[in-house]
Length: 124
Image 1: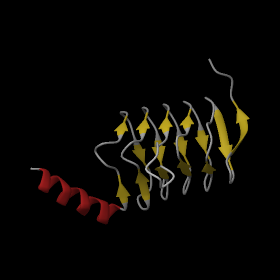
Image 2: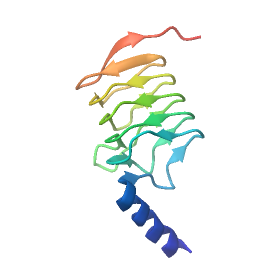
Image 3: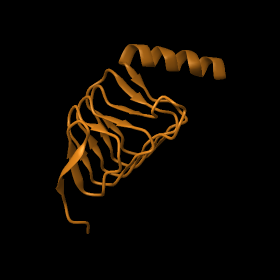
Image 4: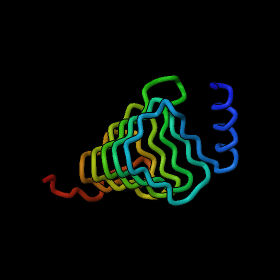
């Protein structure tokens, strides 16, 4: 059975350009608006109702270290990258082409390289 899983996984990964391993803890309601170039590290933890667009990477620093933890209702713009042991709070917007290397508080909007908070919504 495992060999069929890997065969199907590689087929889907090749056809869609989305690497979403079964080991990643993904909450219900994940939306992928545009296919292609999406990579999710197996150790990623992602909350409910998140949105990914093309080119998004959630990964470690390439050293086998920790991967990002993402809250609920996080919206990732195209080609956004979150690298390393970063915590992204709930209700965050990550802008297109943003490189996030440090924690982002709940309700924030973050843009740039390196990512910086440009707006902070009040937490209810």
